[in-house]
Amino acid sequence: MQKIFVDNTEIPLLKRAIDGDSNAFGELYMLHLDPIYRYIYFRINDTNDAEDLTEQTFLKAWQALPDYRDIGNPFSCWLYRIAHNLVIDYWRSKKIDLIDRSVHPGEWPEIESNLLKRVIEAEEAGALARAISRLTADQQQVILLRFVEGYNHAEIARILEKSEGACRMLQNRALIALNQILQGMQG
Amino acid sequence: MDEHISPFDLILDRCLEFVTGEGHTVTDCLAQYPDQRESLEPLLKLALCLQTAQNISAPADFRLTAQTRMENLIAAYPRSHKHNHSFSGTIQGIAKRLRPAIPAPQVTLRWRLAGLAMILILFMAVSSVQASANSLPGQWLYPLKRTLENVEYDLAGSNAAQGNVSAKHTRERFNEVVGLAKTQPQQELAKASSNFQDQLKTTLNYVDSPKGISDRDRSALSSRVYGDLKEEEKELQALLHEIRADYAYRRDLNNLLVLIQGKLAHDKLWIALPPDQTPWIPGLSLTIRATEEPSRTTTRTPTPLPKNTAASNSVGGTHEPWNWGSEWPSEWPTLEETPGPDTQWTEINQPWSTMIPLPTQMATAIPTIYSKIETLIPSLPKDITTKIPSFPDFPHPDWPPEEP
Image 1: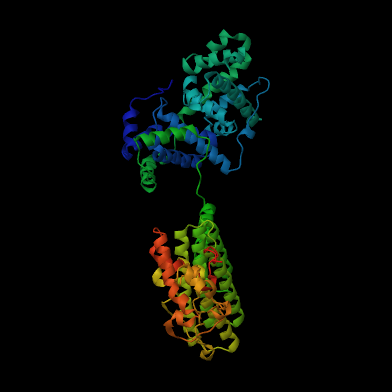
Image 2: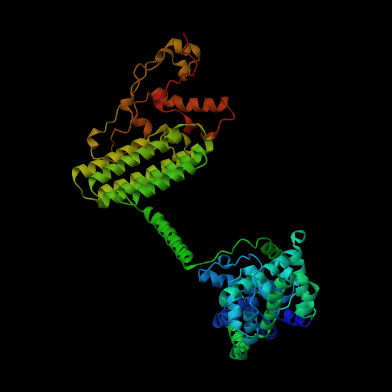
Protein backbone atom coordinates (compact mmCIF):
# COMPACT_ATOMS: atom_id res chain seq x y z
CA MET A 1 0.00 0.00 0.00
CA GLN A 2 2.86 2.34 0.73
CA LYS A 3 3.70 4.40 -2.28
CA ILE A 4 7.14 4.44 -3.79
CA PHE A 5 7.78 8.13 -3.47
CA VAL A 6 10.59 8.33 -6.01
CA ASP A 7 10.02 6.13 -9.00
CA ASN A 8 13.33 5.67 -10.77
CA THR A 9 11.62 4.38 -13.89
CA GLU A 10 10.08 7.73 -14.63
CA ILE A 11 13.35 9.68 -14.47
CA PRO A 12 14.44 8.82 -18.04
CA LEU A 13 10.94 9.61 -19.27
CA LEU A 14 11.06 12.89 -17.45
CA LYS A 15 14.40 13.86 -19.02
CA ARG A 16 13.13 13.03 -22.47
CA ALA A 17 9.93 14.98 -21.86
CA ILE A 18 11.92 18.00 -20.70
CA ASP A 19 13.86 17.84 -23.95
CA GLY A 20 10.58 17.95 -25.85
CA ASP A 21 9.79 14.27 -26.40
CA SER A 22 5.98 14.24 -26.47
CA ASN A 23 5.89 10.42 -26.51
CA ALA A 24 7.78 10.27 -23.24
CA PHE A 25 5.43 12.83 -21.80
CA GLY A 26 2.52 10.71 -23.03
CA GLU A 27 3.84 7.79 -20.99
CA LEU A 28 4.19 9.99 -17.93
CA TYR A 29 0.67 11.18 -18.53
CA MET A 30 -0.73 7.69 -18.49
CA LEU A 31 1.28 6.83 -15.36
CA HIS A 32 -0.10 9.74 -13.38
CA LEU A 33 -3.50 10.10 -14.97
CA ASP A 34 -5.54 8.23 -12.37
CA PRO A 35 -3.98 9.71 -9.22
CA ILE A 36 -4.32 13.21 -10.56
CA TYR A 37 -7.85 12.55 -11.77
CA ARG A 38 -8.83 11.19 -8.34
CA TYR A 39 -7.18 14.04 -6.58
CA ILE A 40 -9.18 16.51 -8.65
CA TYR A 41 -12.38 14.56 -8.69
CA PHE A 42 -12.62 14.26 -4.91
CA ARG A 43 -11.99 17.95 -4.55
CA ILE A 44 -14.53 19.26 -7.05
CA ASN A 45 -17.00 16.38 -7.15
CA ASP A 46 -17.77 16.68 -10.86
CA THR A 47 -16.69 14.05 -13.38
CA ASN A 48 -16.64 16.25 -16.47
CA ASP A 49 -14.88 19.13 -14.78
CA ALA A 50 -12.40 16.67 -13.25
CA GLU A 51 -11.55 15.36 -16.73
CA ASP A 52 -11.03 18.90 -18.02
CA LEU A 53 -8.90 19.92 -15.07
CA THR A 54 -6.85 16.74 -15.39
CA GLU A 55 -6.06 17.56 -18.98
CA GLN A 56 -5.25 21.13 -18.07
CA THR A 57 -2.93 19.93 -15.34
CA PHE A 58 -0.88 17.86 -17.76
CA LEU A 59 -0.96 20.52 -20.45
CA LYS A 60 0.43 23.08 -18.00
CA ALA A 61 3.00 20.54 -16.89
CA TRP A 62 4.11 20.01 -20.49
CA GLN A 63 4.46 23.74 -21.09
CA ALA A 64 6.29 24.33 -17.83
CA LEU A 65 8.56 21.29 -18.03
CA PRO A 66 11.56 23.29 -19.34
CA ASP A 67 11.52 25.13 -16.01
CA TYR A 68 11.25 21.94 -13.97
CA ARG A 69 14.14 21.43 -11.58
CA ASP A 70 14.81 18.21 -9.74
CA ILE A 71 15.27 19.45 -6.18
CA GLY A 72 14.57 16.08 -4.56
CA ASN A 73 10.80 16.14 -4.83
CA PRO A 74 9.17 13.64 -7.17
CA PHE A 75 7.48 14.57 -10.40
CA SER A 76 4.09 13.65 -8.91
CA CYS A 77 4.61 16.27 -6.20
CA TRP A 78 4.95 18.86 -8.93
CA LEU A 79 1.82 17.58 -10.66
CA TYR A 80 -0.18 17.74 -7.43
CA ARG A 81 0.84 21.35 -6.99
CA ILE A 82 -0.35 22.22 -10.47
CA ALA A 83 -3.59 20.34 -9.91
CA HIS A 84 -4.10 22.03 -6.56
CA ASN A 85 -3.70 25.48 -8.11
CA LEU A 86 -6.17 24.60 -10.83
CA VAL A 87 -8.69 23.40 -8.27
CA ILE A 88 -8.32 26.64 -6.34
CA ASP A 89 -8.89 28.60 -9.58
CA TYR A 90 -11.87 26.37 -10.33
CA TRP A 91 -13.57 27.21 -7.05
CA ARG A 92 -12.66 30.86 -7.39
CA SER A 93 -14.36 30.93 -10.76
CA LYS A 94 -17.45 29.56 -9.05
CA LYS A 95 -17.18 32.20 -6.30
CA ILE A 96 -16.99 29.58 -3.55
CA ASP A 97 -14.60 30.02 -0.70
CA LEU A 98 -13.10 26.75 0.40
CA ILE A 99 -12.27 28.06 3.85
CA ASP A 100 -15.85 28.95 4.58
CA ARG A 101 -16.99 25.43 3.80
CA SER A 102 -14.80 23.91 6.45
CA VAL A 103 -16.31 21.98 9.30
CA HIS A 104 -14.81 22.62 12.68
CA PRO A 105 -14.56 19.50 14.80
CA GLY A 106 -16.23 19.63 18.18
CA GLU A 107 -16.56 16.80 20.61
CA TRP A 108 -15.75 13.35 19.36
CA PRO A 109 -18.86 12.28 17.52
CA GLU A 110 -20.62 9.00 17.67
CA ILE A 111 -20.44 7.55 14.20
CA GLU A 112 -23.18 5.43 12.94
CA SER A 113 -21.44 2.35 11.78
CA ASN A 114 -24.35 1.63 9.47
CA LEU A 115 -23.72 4.76 7.50
CA LEU A 116 -20.04 4.01 7.17
CA LYS A 117 -20.82 0.48 6.15
CA ARG A 118 -23.13 1.67 3.44
CA VAL A 119 -20.52 4.06 2.14
CA ILE A 120 -17.97 1.32 2.04
CA GLU A 121 -20.15 -1.41 0.70
CA ALA A 122 -22.01 0.62 -1.88
CA GLU A 123 -18.84 2.40 -2.93
CA GLU A 124 -20.66 5.64 -2.95
CA ALA A 125 -17.74 7.44 -4.40
CA GLY A 126 -19.93 10.37 -5.29
CA ALA A 127 -21.07 10.81 -1.72
CA LEU A 128 -17.51 10.52 -0.50
CA ALA A 129 -16.37 13.07 -3.04
CA ARG A 130 -19.13 15.44 -1.95
CA ALA A 131 -18.06 15.05 1.64
CA ILE A 132 -14.37 15.55 0.87
CA SER A 133 -15.10 18.56 -1.26
CA ARG A 134 -16.56 20.27 1.82
CA LEU A 135 -13.28 20.11 3.70
CA THR A 136 -10.75 22.89 3.63
CA ALA A 137 -8.19 22.80 0.87
CA ASP A 138 -5.42 21.60 3.20
CA GLN A 139 -7.67 18.96 4.74
CA GLN A 140 -8.69 17.72 1.31
CA GLN A 141 -5.09 17.40 0.25
CA VAL A 142 -3.94 15.54 3.32
CA ILE A 143 -6.91 13.17 3.27
CA LEU A 144 -6.45 12.34 -0.39
CA LEU A 145 -2.69 12.04 -0.28
CA ARG A 146 -2.60 10.08 2.97
CA PHE A 147 -5.49 7.64 2.60
CA VAL A 148 -6.41 7.59 -1.08
CA GLU A 149 -2.94 7.86 -2.59
CA GLY A 150 -1.10 6.27 0.33
CA TYR A 151 1.71 8.76 0.89
CA ASN A 152 3.36 8.84 4.31
CA HIS A 153 3.64 11.94 6.46
CA ALA A 154 7.16 12.79 5.33
CA GLU A 155 6.10 12.76 1.69
CA ILE A 156 2.93 14.75 2.37
CA ALA A 157 4.96 17.26 4.31
CA ARG A 158 7.15 17.84 1.27
CA ILE A 159 4.20 18.18 -1.06
CA LEU A 160 2.31 20.59 1.21
CA GLU A 161 5.50 22.31 2.36
CA LYS A 162 4.55 21.82 5.99
CA SER A 163 6.17 20.02 8.92
CA GLU A 164 5.40 16.38 9.57
CA GLY A 165 3.80 17.26 12.90
CA ALA A 166 1.53 19.77 11.22
CA CYS A 167 0.55 17.16 8.67
CA ARG A 168 -0.30 14.65 11.39
CA MET A 169 -2.50 17.18 13.15
CA LEU A 170 -4.06 18.16 9.87
CA GLN A 171 -4.77 14.53 9.08
CA ASN A 172 -6.54 13.94 12.39
CA ARG A 173 -8.61 17.14 12.15
CA ALA A 174 -9.52 16.31 8.56
CA LEU A 175 -10.60 12.82 9.48
CA ILE A 176 -12.78 14.09 12.31
CA ALA A 177 -14.28 16.81 10.10
CA LEU A 178 -15.02 14.36 7.32
CA ASN A 179 -16.71 12.10 9.82
CA GLN A 180 -18.95 14.97 10.90
CA ILE A 181 -19.81 15.80 7.31
CA LEU A 182 -20.78 12.25 6.54
CA GLN A 183 -22.95 12.24 9.63
CA GLY A 184 -24.64 15.43 8.48
CA MET A 185 -25.22 14.00 5.02
CA GLN A 186 -26.84 10.96 6.49
CA GLY A 187 -29.00 13.07 8.76
CA MET B 1 3.96 21.37 16.54
CA ASP B 2 4.74 17.92 17.87
CA GLU B 3 4.88 19.20 21.42
CA HIS B 4 1.23 20.37 21.21
CA ILE B 5 -0.12 17.08 19.93
CA SER B 6 -2.59 15.52 22.35
CA PRO B 7 -2.36 11.91 23.61
CA PHE B 8 -5.44 11.02 21.60
CA ASP B 9 -3.87 12.38 18.44
CA LEU B 10 -0.80 10.25 19.09
CA ILE B 11 -2.94 7.16 19.59
CA LEU B 12 -5.04 7.92 16.50
CA ASP B 13 -1.97 8.48 14.41
CA ARG B 14 -0.40 5.24 15.61
CA CYS B 15 -3.57 3.27 14.96
CA LEU B 16 -3.91 4.75 11.48
CA GLU B 17 -0.37 3.64 10.74
CA PHE B 18 -1.22 0.12 11.97
CA VAL B 19 -4.45 -0.14 10.01
CA THR B 20 -3.63 1.63 6.74
CA GLY B 21 0.11 1.07 6.53
CA GLU B 22 0.96 -2.14 8.28
CA GLY B 23 -2.11 -4.19 7.47
CA HIS B 24 -3.44 -4.67 11.01
CA THR B 25 -7.16 -4.90 11.57
CA VAL B 26 -9.26 -2.32 13.37
CA THR B 27 -10.08 -4.88 16.06
CA ASP B 28 -6.41 -5.49 16.79
CA CYS B 29 -5.82 -1.81 17.18
CA LEU B 30 -8.85 -1.18 19.36
CA ALA B 31 -7.80 -4.02 21.60
CA GLN B 32 -4.66 -2.11 22.44
CA TYR B 33 -6.60 1.06 23.35
CA PRO B 34 -9.88 -0.11 24.95
CA ASP B 35 -10.40 3.26 26.64
CA GLN B 36 -10.40 5.10 23.30
CA ARG B 37 -12.41 2.47 21.48
CA GLU B 38 -15.53 4.55 20.90
CA SER B 39 -13.64 7.46 19.48
CA LEU B 40 -11.11 5.49 17.49
CA GLU B 41 -13.35 2.95 15.82
CA PRO B 42 -15.34 5.25 13.47
CA LEU B 43 -12.24 7.13 12.45
CA LEU B 44 -10.26 4.01 11.67
CA LYS B 45 -13.11 2.59 9.65
CA LEU B 46 -13.44 5.85 7.80
CA ALA B 47 -9.74 5.70 6.97
CA LEU B 48 -10.18 2.21 5.58
CA CYS B 49 -13.20 3.43 3.63
CA LEU B 50 -11.10 6.18 2.10
CA GLN B 51 -8.51 3.64 1.01
CA THR B 52 -11.13 1.95 -1.11
CA ALA B 53 -11.39 5.17 -3.08
CA GLN B 54 -8.02 4.29 -4.55
CA ASN B 55 -9.91 1.98 -6.86
CA ILE B 56 -11.63 4.93 -8.43
CA SER B 57 -9.98 5.78 -11.71
CA ALA B 58 -10.67 8.02 -14.64
CA PRO B 59 -13.67 6.96 -16.72
CA ALA B 60 -12.85 4.36 -19.37
CA ASP B 61 -13.89 6.49 -22.35
CA PHE B 62 -11.76 9.33 -21.03
CA ARG B 63 -8.77 7.02 -20.59
CA LEU B 64 -9.13 5.59 -24.09
CA THR B 65 -8.85 8.95 -25.78
CA ALA B 66 -6.76 10.69 -23.17
CA GLN B 67 -3.38 10.20 -24.81
CA THR B 68 -4.61 11.25 -28.25
CA ARG B 69 -6.29 14.32 -26.87
CA MET B 70 -3.17 15.24 -24.95
CA GLU B 71 -1.07 14.93 -28.10
CA ASN B 72 -3.51 17.23 -29.87
CA LEU B 73 -3.38 19.68 -27.00
CA ILE B 74 0.42 19.63 -27.03
CA ALA B 75 0.39 20.36 -30.75
CA ALA B 76 -2.17 23.14 -30.32
CA TYR B 77 -0.39 24.76 -27.37
CA PRO B 78 3.34 24.38 -27.97
CA ARG B 79 5.88 25.40 -25.41
CA SER B 80 6.53 29.11 -25.45
CA HIS B 81 10.27 28.77 -24.92
CA LYS B 82 13.03 26.22 -25.11
CA HIS B 83 14.64 24.72 -22.06
CA ASN B 84 17.51 26.97 -21.15
CA HIS B 85 20.52 25.39 -19.50
CA SER B 86 22.53 28.59 -19.58
CA PHE B 87 23.78 30.42 -16.52
CA SER B 88 21.33 33.28 -17.10
CA GLY B 89 18.51 30.79 -17.42
CA THR B 90 19.50 29.26 -14.08
CA ILE B 91 19.61 32.67 -12.45
CA GLN B 92 16.19 33.46 -13.88
CA GLY B 93 14.89 30.19 -12.54
CA ILE B 94 16.26 30.93 -9.07
CA ALA B 95 14.82 34.45 -9.17
CA LYS B 96 11.50 33.01 -10.23
CA ARG B 97 11.50 30.66 -7.24
CA LEU B 98 12.51 33.42 -4.87
CA ARG B 99 9.45 35.48 -5.71
CA PRO B 100 6.65 32.99 -6.13
CA ALA B 101 4.19 35.24 -4.35
CA ILE B 102 4.39 37.91 -7.01
CA PRO B 103 1.83 37.08 -9.65
CA ALA B 104 2.96 37.32 -13.22
CA PRO B 105 1.31 40.22 -15.05
CA GLN B 106 -1.55 39.05 -17.17
CA VAL B 107 -2.09 40.78 -20.47
CA THR B 108 -5.82 41.08 -20.48
CA LEU B 109 -7.99 42.64 -23.14
CA ARG B 110 -8.35 45.75 -21.00
CA TRP B 111 -4.58 46.20 -20.83
CA ARG B 112 -4.29 45.64 -24.54
CA LEU B 113 -6.90 48.32 -25.20
CA ALA B 114 -5.11 50.66 -22.81
CA GLY B 115 -1.85 50.04 -24.66
CA LEU B 116 -3.53 50.69 -27.97
CA ALA B 117 -4.99 53.93 -26.64
CA MET B 118 -1.55 55.00 -25.42
CA ILE B 119 -0.05 54.33 -28.83
CA LEU B 120 -2.83 56.32 -30.50
CA ILE B 121 -2.37 59.24 -28.11
CA LEU B 122 1.37 59.17 -28.70
CA PHE B 123 0.85 59.06 -32.45
CA MET B 124 -1.56 62.01 -32.28
CA ALA B 125 0.84 63.97 -30.10
CA VAL B 126 3.72 63.43 -32.53
CA SER B 127 1.49 64.33 -35.48
CA SER B 128 0.30 67.50 -33.73
CA VAL B 129 3.87 68.58 -33.00
CA GLN B 130 4.83 68.02 -36.63
CA ALA B 131 1.76 69.83 -37.90
CA SER B 132 2.28 72.74 -35.51
CA ALA B 133 5.72 73.40 -37.02
CA ASN B 134 4.03 74.91 -40.09
CA SER B 135 1.21 76.70 -38.29
CA LEU B 136 0.68 80.47 -38.51
CA PRO B 137 -0.65 82.99 -35.99
CA GLY B 138 -4.38 82.58 -35.57
CA GLN B 139 -4.34 78.86 -36.23
CA TRP B 140 -5.25 76.43 -33.46
CA LEU B 141 -1.88 74.67 -33.40
CA TYR B 142 0.09 77.92 -33.24
CA PRO B 143 0.10 78.11 -29.39
CA LEU B 144 1.59 74.60 -29.32
CA LYS B 145 4.30 75.72 -31.72
CA ARG B 146 5.20 78.70 -29.53
CA THR B 147 5.16 76.58 -26.40
CA LEU B 148 7.56 74.10 -27.97
CA GLU B 149 9.78 76.97 -29.03
CA ASN B 150 9.80 78.32 -25.49
CA VAL B 151 10.80 74.90 -24.22
CA GLU B 152 13.57 74.71 -26.81
CA TYR B 153 14.78 78.15 -25.76
CA ASP B 154 14.72 77.28 -22.05
CA LEU B 155 16.56 74.02 -22.64
CA ALA B 156 19.39 75.72 -24.53
CA GLY B 157 22.37 75.30 -22.25
CA SER B 158 24.38 78.50 -22.69
CA ASN B 159 23.80 82.12 -23.62
CA ALA B 160 25.37 81.45 -26.99
CA ALA B 161 23.02 78.54 -27.59
CA GLN B 162 20.06 80.64 -26.49
CA GLY B 163 21.16 83.36 -28.86
CA ASN B 164 21.25 80.92 -31.74
CA VAL B 165 17.85 79.50 -30.80
CA SER B 166 16.49 83.02 -30.64
CA ALA B 167 17.96 83.75 -34.07
CA LYS B 168 16.27 80.62 -35.39
CA HIS B 169 12.96 81.71 -33.92
CA THR B 170 13.42 85.17 -35.38
CA ARG B 171 13.74 83.61 -38.79
CA GLU B 172 10.60 81.55 -38.08
CA ARG B 173 8.69 84.71 -37.12
CA PHE B 174 9.70 86.27 -40.43
CA ASN B 175 8.53 83.20 -42.32
CA GLU B 176 5.20 83.59 -40.56
CA VAL B 177 4.98 87.18 -41.76
CA VAL B 178 5.62 86.06 -45.32
CA GLY B 179 3.10 83.24 -44.99
CA LEU B 180 0.43 85.54 -43.63
CA ALA B 181 1.16 88.25 -46.18
CA LYS B 182 -0.05 85.96 -48.92
CA THR B 183 -3.10 84.54 -47.21
CA GLN B 184 -4.25 86.22 -44.04
CA PRO B 185 -5.94 89.52 -43.14
CA GLN B 186 -3.99 92.52 -42.03
CA GLN B 187 -4.77 92.11 -38.35
CA GLU B 188 -2.89 88.83 -38.16
CA LEU B 189 -0.09 90.27 -40.27
CA ALA B 190 0.36 93.18 -37.86
CA LYS B 191 0.50 90.71 -34.99
CA ALA B 192 3.03 88.54 -36.81
CA SER B 193 5.11 91.60 -37.62
CA SER B 194 5.06 92.60 -33.96
CA ASN B 195 6.13 89.09 -32.99
CA PHE B 196 9.03 89.29 -35.41
CA GLN B 197 10.18 92.62 -34.01
CA ASP B 198 10.05 91.33 -30.44
CA GLN B 199 11.99 88.20 -31.34
CA LEU B 200 14.56 90.22 -33.29
CA LYS B 201 15.02 92.49 -30.29
CA THR B 202 15.66 89.46 -28.09
CA THR B 203 18.19 88.10 -30.56
CA LEU B 204 20.02 91.42 -30.87
CA ASN B 205 20.30 91.57 -27.09
CA TYR B 206 22.59 88.55 -27.32
CA VAL B 207 24.65 90.35 -29.93
CA ASP B 208 24.84 93.55 -27.91
CA SER B 209 25.49 92.03 -24.52
CA PRO B 210 28.92 90.46 -24.13
CA LYS B 211 27.90 88.71 -20.90
CA GLY B 212 28.13 84.97 -21.01
CA ILE B 213 29.09 84.77 -24.68
CA SER B 214 32.60 84.37 -25.97
CA ASP B 215 33.87 86.65 -28.69
CA ARG B 216 33.89 83.81 -31.17
CA ASP B 217 30.27 82.84 -30.41
CA ARG B 218 29.19 86.42 -30.51
CA SER B 219 30.88 86.92 -33.84
CA ALA B 220 29.22 83.81 -35.23
CA LEU B 221 25.85 84.92 -33.95
CA SER B 222 26.29 88.39 -35.41
CA SER B 223 27.22 86.89 -38.75
CA ARG B 224 24.17 84.66 -38.66
CA VAL B 225 21.78 87.45 -37.74
CA TYR B 226 23.27 89.72 -40.37
CA GLY B 227 22.94 87.03 -43.02
CA ASP B 228 19.35 86.35 -42.01
CA LEU B 229 18.46 90.00 -42.11
CA LYS B 230 19.98 90.37 -45.56
CA GLU B 231 17.94 87.46 -46.83
CA GLU B 232 14.81 88.76 -45.16
CA GLU B 233 15.35 92.14 -46.73
CA LYS B 234 15.53 90.54 -50.17
CA GLU B 235 12.47 88.40 -49.57
CA LEU B 236 10.46 91.32 -48.28
CA GLN B 237 11.37 93.45 -51.26
CA ALA B 238 10.37 90.63 -53.58
CA LEU B 239 7.13 90.20 -51.65
CA LEU B 240 6.28 93.88 -51.91
CA HIS B 241 6.93 93.71 -55.61
CA GLU B 242 4.81 90.60 -56.00
CA ILE B 243 1.68 91.24 -54.00
CA ARG B 244 -1.02 93.75 -54.74
CA ALA B 245 -2.59 94.81 -51.49
CA ASP B 246 -4.20 97.88 -50.00
CA TYR B 247 -2.23 100.73 -48.54
CA ALA B 248 -2.36 99.68 -44.90
CA TYR B 249 -1.23 96.19 -45.81
CA ARG B 250 1.74 97.46 -47.79
CA ARG B 251 2.52 99.96 -45.07
CA ASP B 252 3.00 97.18 -42.51
CA LEU B 253 5.35 95.32 -44.80
CA ASN B 254 7.16 98.48 -45.73
CA ASN B 255 7.67 99.39 -42.10
CA LEU B 256 9.11 95.97 -41.54
CA LEU B 257 11.48 96.45 -44.45
CA VAL B 258 12.63 99.76 -43.01
CA LEU B 259 13.14 98.10 -39.64
CA ILE B 260 15.26 95.37 -41.18
CA GLN B 261 17.32 97.85 -43.11
CA GLY B 262 17.82 99.85 -39.95
CA LYS B 263 19.00 96.79 -38.07
CA LEU B 264 21.37 96.00 -40.91
CA ALA B 265 23.00 99.30 -40.02
CA HIS B 266 23.41 98.04 -36.45
CA ASP B 267 27.08 98.61 -35.69
CA LYS B 268 27.28 95.68 -33.27
CA LEU B 269 26.47 93.38 -36.11
CA TRP B 270 29.21 94.86 -38.24
CA ILE B 271 31.84 94.58 -35.56
CA ALA B 272 31.74 90.84 -35.61
CA LEU B 273 31.44 90.40 -39.33
CA PRO B 274 34.32 89.14 -41.42
CA PRO B 275 36.03 91.79 -43.59
CA ASP B 276 34.35 90.76 -46.83
CA GLN B 277 30.93 91.36 -45.28
CA THR B 278 31.72 94.65 -43.61
CA PRO B 279 29.28 97.18 -45.03
CA TRP B 280 31.23 100.37 -44.47
CA ILE B 281 34.81 101.26 -44.26
CA PRO B 282 36.11 104.60 -45.48
CA GLY B 283 37.25 104.20 -49.01
CA LEU B 284 35.13 101.12 -49.70
CA SER B 285 32.01 101.26 -51.76
CA LEU B 286 28.61 100.45 -50.35
CA THR B 287 25.41 99.65 -52.09
CA ILE B 288 22.29 100.95 -50.48
CA ARG B 289 18.95 99.71 -51.62
CA ALA B 290 16.48 101.73 -53.58
CA THR B 291 13.40 103.32 -52.13
CA GLU B 292 10.40 105.09 -53.52
CA GLU B 293 11.65 108.61 -53.00
CA PRO B 294 14.88 109.27 -54.83
CA SER B 295 14.29 113.00 -54.62
CA ARG B 296 15.27 113.02 -50.95
CA THR B 297 18.73 111.85 -51.70
CA THR B 298 21.33 114.53 -51.16
CA THR B 299 24.93 114.53 -52.15
CA ARG B 300 26.67 116.80 -49.78
CA THR B 301 29.79 118.74 -50.36
CA PRO B 302 32.49 117.92 -47.82
CA THR B 303 33.00 120.62 -45.28
CA PRO B 304 36.40 122.23 -45.77
CA LEU B 305 38.74 122.03 -42.84
CA PRO B 306 40.42 125.16 -41.55
CA LYS B 307 43.88 125.84 -42.86
CA ASN B 308 46.88 124.56 -41.00
CA THR B 309 48.18 126.88 -38.35
CA ALA B 310 51.59 127.33 -36.83
CA ALA B 311 50.38 125.73 -33.64
CA SER B 312 49.49 122.59 -35.39
CA ASN B 313 52.62 122.52 -37.41
CA SER B 314 54.71 123.09 -34.34
CA VAL B 315 53.76 119.71 -32.97
CA GLY B 316 54.86 117.72 -35.86
CA GLY B 317 53.46 119.19 -38.95
CA THR B 318 51.47 116.10 -39.77
CA HIS B 319 47.76 115.75 -40.29
CA GLU B 320 47.33 113.26 -37.52
CA PRO B 321 44.32 114.08 -35.36
CA TRP B 322 46.28 114.92 -32.26
CA ASN B 323 48.23 117.44 -34.33
CA TRP B 324 45.24 119.24 -35.76
CA GLY B 325 45.01 121.70 -32.90
CA SER B 326 42.85 124.62 -33.86
CA GLU B 327 42.22 123.03 -37.23
CA TRP B 328 39.81 120.68 -35.53
CA PRO B 329 36.60 120.94 -37.54
CA SER B 330 34.15 123.31 -36.02
CA GLU B 331 31.26 121.62 -37.72
CA TRP B 332 30.89 117.88 -37.50
CA PRO B 333 28.20 115.98 -39.29
CA THR B 334 25.31 115.32 -36.95
CA LEU B 335 23.76 111.94 -36.34
CA GLU B 336 20.69 112.95 -38.28
CA GLU B 337 22.77 113.63 -41.34
CA THR B 338 24.32 110.18 -41.38
CA PRO B 339 22.46 107.29 -42.93
CA GLY B 340 20.18 105.64 -40.47
CA PRO B 341 17.06 103.52 -40.27
CA ASP B 342 14.76 106.37 -41.22
CA THR B 343 16.82 107.77 -44.03
CA GLN B 344 15.88 106.65 -47.47
CA TRP B 345 18.42 106.55 -50.18
CA THR B 346 18.57 106.05 -53.85
CA GLU B 347 20.50 103.18 -55.24
CA ILE B 348 23.95 104.50 -55.81
CA ASN B 349 27.28 102.89 -56.08
CA GLN B 350 30.00 105.24 -55.10
CA PRO B 351 32.60 105.46 -52.38
CA TRP B 352 31.11 105.88 -48.97
CA SER B 353 33.46 108.71 -48.22
CA THR B 354 31.88 110.83 -50.90
CA MET B 355 28.46 110.49 -49.29
CA ILE B 356 29.49 111.54 -45.81
CA PRO B 357 30.38 115.13 -45.10
CA LEU B 358 33.83 113.96 -44.11
CA PRO B 359 36.57 116.54 -43.89
CA THR B 360 39.01 115.95 -46.69
CA GLN B 361 42.04 115.99 -44.45
CA MET B 362 40.39 113.64 -42.03
CA ALA B 363 39.54 111.29 -44.87
CA THR B 364 43.16 111.15 -45.80
CA ALA B 365 44.21 110.95 -42.16
CA ILE B 366 42.16 107.93 -41.24
CA PRO B 367 44.22 105.36 -43.16
CA THR B 368 47.28 106.88 -41.53
CA ILE B 369 45.70 106.41 -38.13
CA TYR B 370 45.02 102.79 -38.93
CA SER B 371 48.59 102.15 -40.01
CA LYS B 372 49.80 103.90 -36.86
CA ILE B 373 47.74 101.65 -34.69
CA GLU B 374 48.99 98.59 -36.51
CA THR B 375 52.52 99.74 -35.97
CA LEU B 376 52.01 100.41 -32.29
CA ILE B 377 50.27 97.17 -31.53
CA PRO B 378 51.95 94.31 -33.39
CA SER B 379 49.51 91.80 -32.06
CA LEU B 380 46.58 93.63 -33.50
CA PRO B 381 44.69 91.51 -36.03
CA LYS B 382 44.84 92.46 -39.65
CA ASP B 383 41.12 93.08 -39.84
CA ILE B 384 41.31 95.83 -37.23
CA THR B 385 39.69 98.19 -39.67
CA THR B 386 36.47 96.33 -39.22
CA LYS B 387 36.55 97.10 -35.51
CA ILE B 388 36.92 100.85 -35.75
CA PRO B 389 33.94 102.58 -34.14
CA SER B 390 31.49 104.35 -36.36
CA PHE B 391 32.17 107.81 -37.53
CA PRO B 392 30.13 109.85 -35.01
CA ASP B 393 32.31 108.46 -32.24
CA PHE B 394 35.27 110.59 -33.37
CA PRO B 395 37.21 111.89 -31.60
CA HIS B 396 37.69 108.88 -29.41
CA PRO B 397 37.69 109.76 -25.71
CA ASP B 398 40.79 107.68 -25.13
CA TRP B 399 42.88 109.56 -27.59
CA PRO B 400 45.57 111.96 -26.28
CA PRO B 401 44.31 115.35 -25.18
CA GLU B 402 44.69 118.32 -27.41
CA GLU B 403 47.93 120.29 -27.07
CA PRO B 404 47.43 123.58 -25.26
